[in-house]
Length: 310
Ligand SMILES: Cc1cc2nc3c(=O)[nH]c(=O)nc-3n(C[C@H](O)[C@H](O)[C@H](O)COP(=O)(O)OP(=O)(O)OC[C@H]3O[C@@H](n4cnc5c(N)ncnc54)[C@H](O)[C@@H]3O)c2cc1C
Image (cartoon, rainbow, N blue to C red; front, side):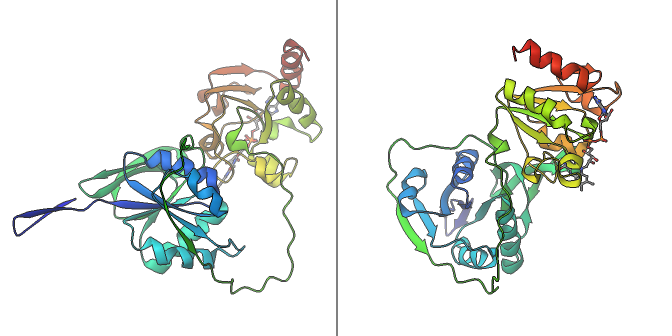
């Protein structure tokens, strides 16, 4: 942004700060924002990892407690010297961003799809109406969350010349009495190349074996709609695709017995090739797929597995 003062022109270069406790997402955000705004990076990890980020200034949080509030407070002390602040939209990151927005009284926009600077103002786009439309707007927000998979990670060949600062995170105010780890699969759906997703149409838990065979034949991962993951718990919640689950963009997404409600579609619409199998020919999933097969999944899937030589 240029300002004229006493016939001198001052140009203010906007700067951004990226934060994600997930280093991979931090690198994706660097790529996503590259050429649009110069960014420094804050992350929680080992000092030795700093050189992997293509940024001039690195802030390393000395701990990452279960309570996001001390993390937000630590970040607030540095974020205020930046024009824009971008947070990785992980479960914890979303909380951190919201707390910072509240504490600093700075508006935020969640899960942006694009960011540009226009005459010193931010122009962003994001899904709207649960993903039915994409809204583009000029915004006064200065805090943004960014989803995993927004771009490929920016990798550096040579170590960057960097200024590295360690930022102290206070102990959380909450007293943790006991901790039970949530059962986690070893999968990261956001990085899977092939996903076989099952919906309520699978009908019974044992039906997962049929879908699982197709997933293994293709070297893919099993995922599910909300009824299958969150309601029936036939698959873990980390495998749910959609608005309240993961946003995925595999090369191939196969939807078995999924009707195609918008809350599901928003999580998989960036897939390269979508194949749908549903016995109802008017199911909305057929408007979203490249290849559609109308029929019973229990008849079609075993034939596909056989055709693949398994
Ligand atoms: C705030 C909010 C957030 C949500 N978040 C998510 C989310 O993250 N992910 C998500 O998935 N949903 C989400 N939902 C729920 C969403 O609205 C739908 O209810 C859900 O996606 C439907 O799941 P489904 O397609 O598996 O089931 P259904 O809509 O019941 O569809 C089952 C389909 O299977 C077909 N079928 C049945 N038997 C067979 C067979 N033998 N062979 C082939 N086809 C068969 C049927 O024709 C039908 O089309 C959310 C809803 C809300 C309100």
